[in-house]
Image 1 (spheres, rainbow, N blue to C red):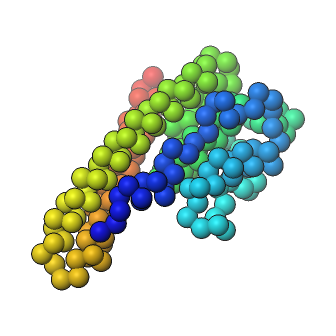
Image 2 (cartoon, one colour; image 1 turned 90 degrees about the vertical axis):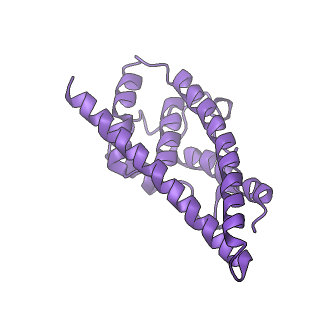
Length: 191
């Protein structure tokens, strides 16, 4: 069975972009990419993997996933929004990400929202999610070990059971997130 403590360490779950990591000056696209690459380097599955590219950022801009930049420079608010996009895009469709962030973008652009306070709340919830994940992963590993004990070649099959269990849990969370996106869109339509 996989060493769960080592697995959670290898995942670099605590890697994120804190407010204090974001410069107080506007950044060019290459500087934004470097900030993300440096911050999430340990989370890459392979060395060749790219965290963020110019094409990705330009596609987010074209798709209006964040409000327009000024003079080809990205503000702290843009970086916070790009971080939210980065986190959401691996689970939600780009259209769903846009739907989620539309109201946030509108308020941030009109300066009707302190995006830094919102972002701090997000980071706080993120830390709680990491703790819950570690507990849940431990429980799922114990269940896979228990269920796999009666099977031939338990090490590999226990790991397959754990992988299948994690994928299932991931799908449950994804479906819940998609349902919440749909509810958010419906609420906006009824205003």
